[in-house]
Image (cartoon, rainbow, N blue to C red; front, side, top):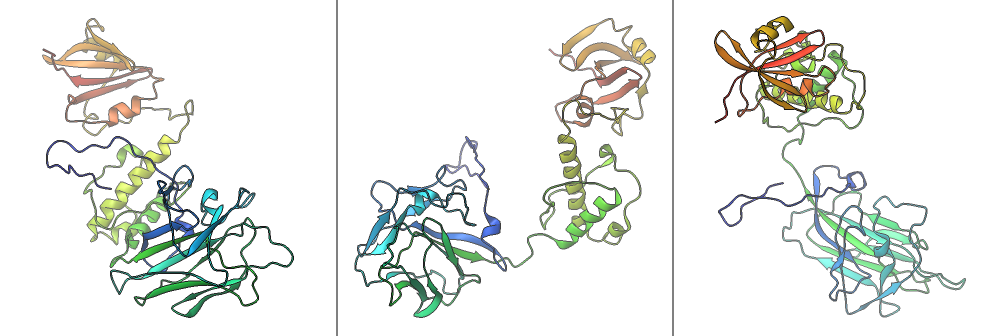
Amino acid sequence: MGISKGTGSGVPFISAIELRPSLNASYPTQVGSLALEMRFDTGQVPTDFEGYRYPFDVHDRFWYAYDRDDWTQLSTSQTIDSGSSNDYQPPPIVMRTAATPRRANASLDFFWLPADDKASYYVYMHFAEVEKLQANQSRLQYITRNGQVFYELFAPDYLYTNSIFSPAALSGGKYNFSIRKAENSTLPPILKAIEIYTLKEFLELETNQEDIDAINIIKSTYKIKRTGKEIHVPLKPTCGKVNLEKNKLTGSVPVGLIERRKNVAGISMLLLSVAALCWGIKRKRQPGAVTDANPIIAPAEARKRQFTYSEILQITNNLKRILGKGGFGTVYHGCIDKTQVAVKMLSPSSVQVNLLIRIHHINLTSLVGYCNDENHIGLVYEYMKIT
């Protein structure tokens, strides 16, 4: 996702962003990804109403109204797919209406001319019977493409969605579809909705397989357990260096990674992924959960200056001068070799201790050292006088 200034001046901004669940598993492809070409609710006539989307469609697909002079509409007030769910989950409000030809013996015909003759497409058609047929009535229909049978004879289920699609991408530059009634059918054909997607193929894999293998090696070596979907990293790296010592990953580099030492980009990205994995694990801990007996793992630069509580008392002249108080503890003024410092004494029960010593920002003063003496936990910073 990209956000552009548009006018060439000012700061780009976004007011809100909403995420909807997708149906990637329901729209499979052999290769590549799908881009929407068109999606129509054929049972709706476009007037001032353009179509349905969220909240009618929980996946936020936009179903545009579609009108043809030689088509008419059927509808029902009954619930569609009650107690059941079609894999493509078209909105019930869309499936309550259907298009049918005005002439009883006519067919439902539609076509499109692709801008690129070499493009490939996937087609999805949705059907459901909306009329309660009598014993002497039948609605049997079949689908052709360019005069050849695309889908053989079928009867739409009453109040339940039937979806017919192309299992492989269609190509050839000519797309004339026709939904026709069978010779022994007493009723004309119907169509509820149609979706057409363009196949977008990628010249390179979307995920580098070596990166995936390396991530799995790290997970196995350090016995990292994680439920849910696997991590996928981009092919090109966006980070060159990650220090994992604060995530308690210590020891030698796995053999599988040494064999990949020439692939610097891949190793960099897999380390970033593991860091994200560890962060995700930590965030899943519930409030009140048992934490490590030693809550502080000092940064590398702070390990050179570990102070005892007695030394903290000497530095601050027995905590004499208070600089301020906050949610995490009290800040005291102190001196180390005539250098002024600020000493923040933290509550041992504070769940923010680990986070505080891990954060580094260009606008924060440098961390001089720390204290982790029994029940006394503190951080020693350079003193910055506020004017």
